[in-house]
Length: 425
Image (cartoon, rainbow, N blue to C red):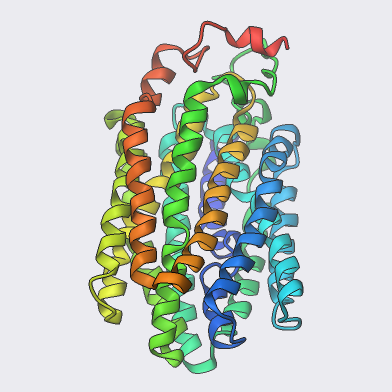
């Protein structure tokens, strides 16, 4: 009875945490580019360089963050500390708006924010187990996108009247609510062994030992998936900031509000697609969903160049909701497939998110340089081509991870070496 009550309480607390962390985990996100372009008069190349530097700080922290989540039993407190760091660093930006103070503050924010994805996934796995994990991740992403949509709508309306700096106050309010939500997750409901993917059931009496870290380099499907993730974000990360810059150059007063419209439009679409992953991915296949997310990006890049009309750009941004909605929900599911019973679920998540961050860091720099040298249309086409390459690679090199998890639960990679051999290293 107590266990069921804990799970019901955890359900509600995780819903709230994902809703309010939506704004916190991304920090200033695409609003940063608009703020620096319109309020601080930075050019596109300088903005791209800044965002890449900040993202590199996140890259350095990714895998250690996953290892920390695997090791610690204070997962809730780690998330609370990260939320405080992200918010404080971002609120300091208007005080010191020159290049290096902004780069340092955003680097700290990025490094702290990398904790949230593996921590939320670990807590979800530790409470609900592998059988309910895909559905719970779909629900997490649903509330995350709903939170992003609400925050963006509020930012859009208030920024029209009070200017782009209003996003700083919104971030602070969401951070406070997220702290309360995280602390409401029942600590007693979390199985910390299960949270690292070490075993399949709370009923297991014999605890397996974690595999060695070399598993990250010997699991071929994980390496293939990492390359696909790099290409996805190399294409995707710069698209929304570029759209925001185009909108801001067209009308400075409406720049932040139109950026919010883009975000709201995408987030609204992400909600049903995240739900679809949660409900259907275990039946239809995990790889198929990931491939669909990749294929959306070349279409999106091509459509952006057809018109500079704000309504058209906001409309095309709806496609971001399809790709990102699927990607955010399927990523931890695929990693959980591959790391099942290794005890390295969260460090593997950190490694994959490191790959994601590498793609994002290169994306903003690449896009900024192409815009300065050849214009926005060339940049959108370049980014779309990268995603097309990623889709081809995914189609031919990545196996269906759901089948791997189902047919070989104790050896989730295609080698002759069992998990126990790697664990002994």
